[in-house]
Length: 150
Image 1 (cartoon, rainbow, N blue to C red):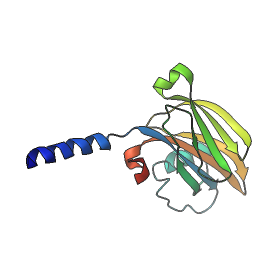
Image 2 (cartoon, rainbow, N blue to C red):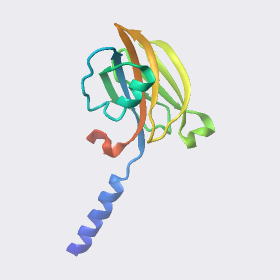
Image 3 (cartoon, rainbow, N blue to C red):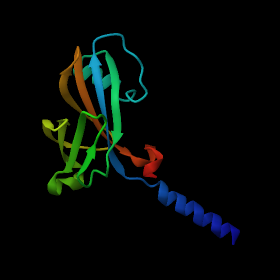
């Protein structure tokens, strides 16, 4: 009896650990200056630097979406900037989405993208102070997310 209970718990924990991909977003302030390490940006720093040419990257905010990318969802990494992620019709099965970047109520950018768990989407935002705002959108396994997704 005890062995079957342990086996059932192991099976249940395996089922619970199976996670789906949810959009994660990050607003970055990029500028020229002395680079500072940031654990949120470690996987993206090299690509951000080569794509946008800035040395210094500072995270302004990060957030998980309010739902998986299989349905319309919102990501609110800061009070002023947020993203609407909408599955793109029948192509949604292949993680094709329509993305809209907002600054408060104003739509700044509309784009179509194909999201996957391997490569992020970088969105060039408006100029800000002496640099640029950049938005990172990435599908991530909810197993790596905060505990409220488990």
